[in-house]
Amino acid sequence: MNTGKNTGKIVRVRQTGSPSRRHFSQRQTLVGLKLNRIGRIAELVDTPQTRGMIAKVAHLVEVVEKE
Image 1 (cartoon, rainbow, N blue to C red):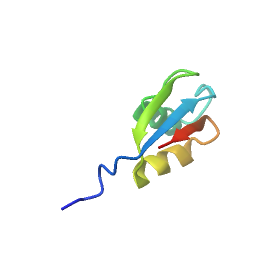
Image 2 (image 1 turned 60 degrees about the vertical axis):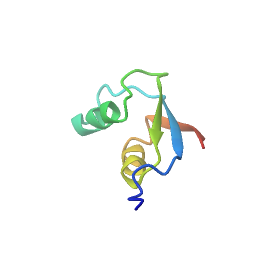
Image 3 (image 1 turned 90 degrees about the vertical axis):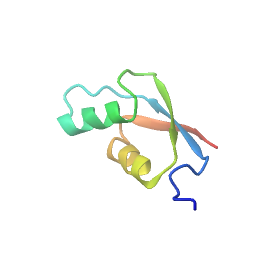
Image 4 (image 1 turned 135 degrees about the vertical axis):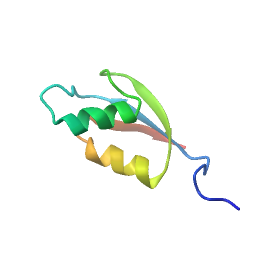
């Protein structure tokens, strides 16, 4: 049975802003997204949890492409 954890869809996210002078939880969210430097790109599985994390730091990241 498919639990929906690995649907095969990938989201590429690029960090565009600096986490300095931001709330600590936003910094931790960037680390959770495997981002911690401007310009770094992470490939993540497209899940509701990942979407929520991206929404939390939407002003610091951009979605490069979806598959």
